[in-house]
Amino acid sequence: MLVLLLDGVAFERIEHLWRQGYFRMFHRPARVISVFPTLTDPAYDAFFRCGPTPGYEAGYFDRAANRLTGAFRLYLRGANEKWVRFTDYRIGFFEDAIMYLFPRRTFRSELRRTRRVVDDCLARGRPEVVIYILSTDGLGHMLTCPKIDEMLTELDRWVAHLLDERDGELEIVMLADHGISTTPTKRFRLRRRLRRAGLRTVKRLARPGDVAVPTFGLLDFARVHTYDDATRDQVVEALAGCPQVELVAWRAGERVGLLTDGGQAQIAARQDGDRLVYRYQAVCGDPLGLEGVCPAMQAAGAMDDEGFAGSAAWVARTAEHDFPAAVPRLWDGMCRLSAEQPDVAVSLADGWYTGSGLLSYFVQMQGTHGGLHRRAGETFAMSTSSELPTPIGLEELSLVIRRRHRWQPGERGRVPDRPEKNGD
Ligand SMILES: [Zn+2]
Image (cartoon, protein in one colour):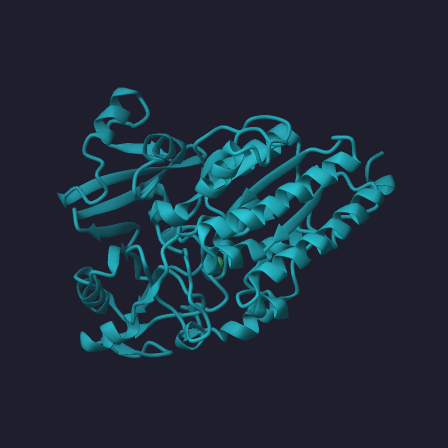
């Protein structure tokens, strides 16, 4: 089996191409709801079940050490990418940087290189090959939709060729980690906004009013670590009124508070047997627009008397909302999937990004991700052997693929990759 992992490809792109007759070696694409934040490391750590991720991305705030990590050093060491150990190919770290300047060239070169890796692994009789193509994220950030589509048709030919040469005797599963928005982005100066509200942006939290804001990628998402609860409340207040901010979430013990134009609510979770169940309680208004949904879930037996429901039920009922499956995704993202548990997280409105000032001088982005919205939250999966269930959460998808394909991802380097010693 070949598992093709892409980066930053929206469901809409693949579905559009599939309707036009591309990627027809695959069954119909499933709508996959990614994790929150919609970033590669938490998403693929969840998919390979090797989390929690140390930080949301290589540059993060390490609470135990009370410091912002050296982002580029960690990135170059791959220290935040545990999931990469399960793959046979990942582009060299130094090429990452130039990828955003030359996304098409990098994509084509990755297609050539990955083809050699796949051939080589299969020639050695390896039962499963896992390939990660990063440059699709570069296409998504830097190109308009018609140009992304044009490049993805080259991937369609790549897959067709591969299958042709093996007379169709290869199962392929292809998916991506998160979607990507499609509006050219303007920079939101979030740190400046916080400073204007009287807060101090620092590297170490030492006194009330201190906040640490990790910035690494150029994202429609940001998180803030605060000295204490009072500082956290000030941050929430400073960001809640910004037109660039679509949703503010904060951690209050084991609960997650959230605020949108529509009001304020609270999310709680508890263990129910071997799974988690999640509850949404409006404080005022109905910020996620779930007023009608919860009674229907209860009536259908998908929600218990106290209002708790499992992740799959939330995905099934709210996959097409503006913030798909927001109830489990917000709680998981703030409390479970990463060791970085920020005090405040914000999801930006369409057309805005925030992040490193230096990087933003080099690039004009056509889209980005990180936020909770459907724009970045919705990606895809498809298989050559069967139609995958849809809509589906990324973690559930991982279980379905393992079951259907009897797939047990193995760590490279530890797992012997000579099948003659492995398979008898
Ligand atoms: Zn990206």
